[in-house]
Image 1 (cartoon, rainbow, N blue to C red):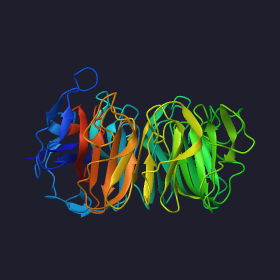
Image 2: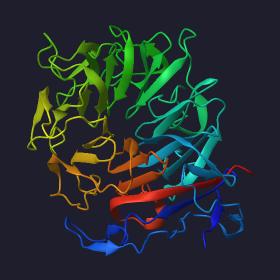
Image 3: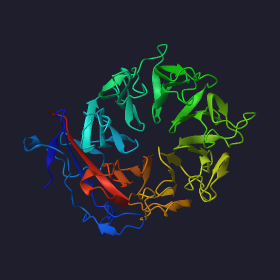
Image 4: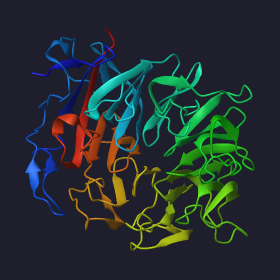
Length: 449
């Protein structure tokens, strides 16, 4: 019998998990030391719900009308509601619902779930707010943002003014704060990094705010951080933005890719006449690189998807995240030969990446917590040749990769997650072990206080 819980803001939510595959989920013992810890059976079978573990008082337990099972989307106030978007931060996730609600779960040390930072540090899903006219969300390391009718609003970590307000004494905020508009141009797309954010405005320009410690705002070194968005010089006709830890890239109309910021592991790629540099506060076009249909940035590495579905990566390769034998770093983009006719490529704020076609997900790089989804984990389980993640879905819509975990949104608007769960970023009810194969995360909310 599933229970429901009311969060500190008066919202009521419950997180349920449906079994990964026949036979249950494989977890590793969080208390075992070293690689190769024995696998444990989570005891989660098909069509069995697992109650969420949230730190609440007895008088917080309430009744709510729970949907029996939303085969499409999430349950809000007893009605199934479409999930429009799924994003992942370092150790948390958020979804944008058709009801204009944004809900998040996982690590909450800095208010990134939209509730006051909790000493328990992780939690089940909380509805951040019902925004008016919400169209898009993005997640950084420990903060998140939404584009809504009244502009861009952000919450969570603000140690480098990444919420759009000067850091000062406001080092965090679980209450969404508005990022200042720039020249009256509305923002139409977002990408968030470790402590900075970037957006495309209505004039197809790239603007960035937050930390500029290594030039990731595309602004002069004298500006170490900025709550006010700054226009990135030398970048126009932007079609897509991507941010890594401290690096930013733009895919331009026509497929050229231009990057700026940290270059400690060659993640800015090869640039004509650039030579060797540790960082750059100015954008530069990567050459040679096939015209890109999509770009994705991880922690000190980047990947691109060509028009014909080929994947190439460059930057740090300590864990094989470039799709070649682990070691060193490379400025030259390397084609991953086994990845062709892919529909998308994703890299989170960690050291692994995934590409997908209609139904299959192929992942490579670091796998110490099972974030590749192939049923393995451990310090010696990183792979340079993409492996097929176990895929219980029929067709896939999108992927969202965190630091040590991964999530998927399928065509039925169902959410699946796997990898590290020590902060509840996969599902709090499964304990703090690693989840080695995808589990379905069922989301139930009530917006009535």
